[in-house]
Image 1 (cartoon, one colour):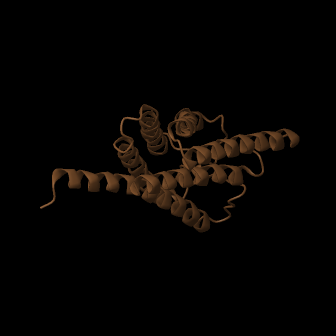
Image 2: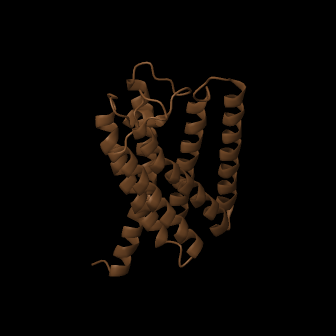
Image 3: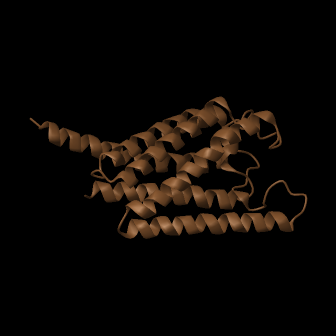
Amino acid sequence: METPLVLAQWLQKGLLICGILYAVITFATDIVAGILTRGYRFDLHTANTFGGIGTTTRPVVLPINIVAGFLLIAFATGVWFSVDGNWVLRCMACLLVVHAILSMLAIAFFPFHPAESAAYPANKANLMFMAPAVILFFLAIILGTIGYHDWLRWLSLGILLLFFLGALLSISIFQLIPGRRSAPSIGIQERTMIYAEMLWLVLQALVFLNK
């Protein structure tokens, strides 16, 4: 019969694996939904379109995103119990939990309206949840640069630099093309950030699982 300590270790590993599942589900949903959406271009269109009101993909994407949110919360819980009192990484885990909650609230109760402008009231409400969610994930990566003391610190720094360069490029392109409502490469920029975040989560999970 397995001891409580062994069972706790297995539970902890299961929670950490949820981070890998979150990344796989998020990546697969983005790719499949983009392929199934007529006229969709990954380089020009944002990922939040798939969960928007009036889209054919929302009925499928909504429950998947909710499941992904709970997987991220489970992963953050696993990190909390894996860092042996490291308060910086525990704060990082808390930020990931709040990020997941805000993201789920945004897509479930304040969904994006792709057919409307950014000034549309519902889209403003969506932004009120999604913008803090993005900022919290960014802050979580910053804490990762402080809390880790190995190559994960350098990975976190590299992702932060990638975010900064992507934002700078987007602003530059936007200013060079008057009258555009978004940068022509917004899809590439957004996915570069999203996929980098998922890679960061997966590598964290693998490191903790191998300890």
